[in-house]
Length: 435
Image (cartoon, rainbow, N blue to C red; front, side, top):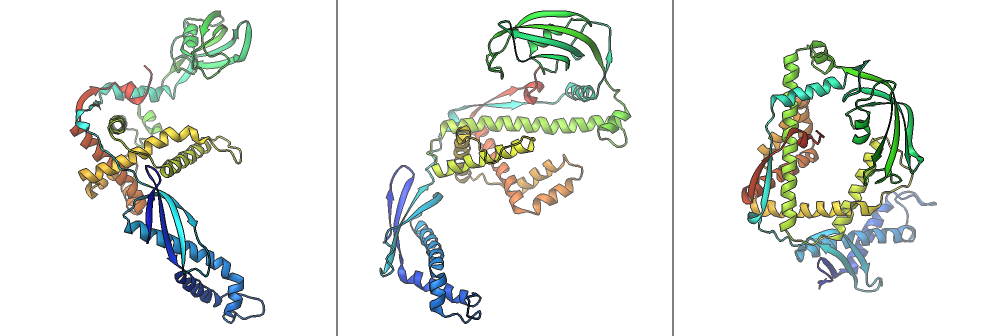
């Protein structure tokens, strides 16, 4: 008779047994099947005596059969005891005597936690909103034009958006620090490649001028040797060049992907793209607000097996991202798991909370919701119909979309249950841009 012990909040140990005859019978059957094709010196395939097969392959087949039978027995006992196993069990044989009538074993594992859903109705939730305006389209077009600007020499003081060529030298305590000097260095003022205080000191200088000034590095500056310290800089300005932006015409429209050069069509595409992007960002912001509230009000233990698995996934994703960015990763290098524990714990918790909410409030993804999301995403591609076909040709891709629909349904449910206040966000805030 199988028994289940409680070892901790989520840890369990199953004690059970397997009839020895079941293992013997399966081992014998497998050896006979193996004998049809096994190549043993001195015998033709199919003619190898069973005793020879047993001597040569018996231990290996015994191990394989025992592993398979253990897995099946464990699965049967899990179903019989209505256990929800998280991760993989750790098996231990308690009696391996071939003469014994049964093989006793134990399996230690974790179960999924009980998710206690808190009351969302008493929580405050912020719903971010944004309505696209003409100025957003105009500013985006200006940004695209700036990216294709041609810089031309000017005889005036440097100002924002100018490209300047400088020599500079910086000292801390009278000593030049690492990275603190350069010659013929070009920088576009206002792009924030340099610290704001450094760029602001250059504004107003003219070609041929030299200027010295003091500046304090931020406490969180990436250069630890100078972070939080005061430095003295000397800058020599060699040239000032002002940007000449390309005209908004058919040539620019064609350059930016509108084949017939129609400027109105180009503006319409910018509006469509910005509409999709702002809606995506608003949706993501509101989802994050909801998830934070759910984490606050819901209580649950996190299974170590699920946490370890998620840490491994996040570590792998980070390594892959580094490689895709062109970083050379030494062979055998691995990122410290501690970097991802907090994020992994949050993701596992949310996954369990969302699953319970979907079950309790019937928030499952409907086929029409999945189809609508796929079609909406496909609109950003040149051939939307091909993208839709691509998704529907593979069930695993649709599963990803279904997961996003589930999240959307949970967000809608939470927004309907909590005390919601709306806040209109600014374009730069939404897009993560500095003013």
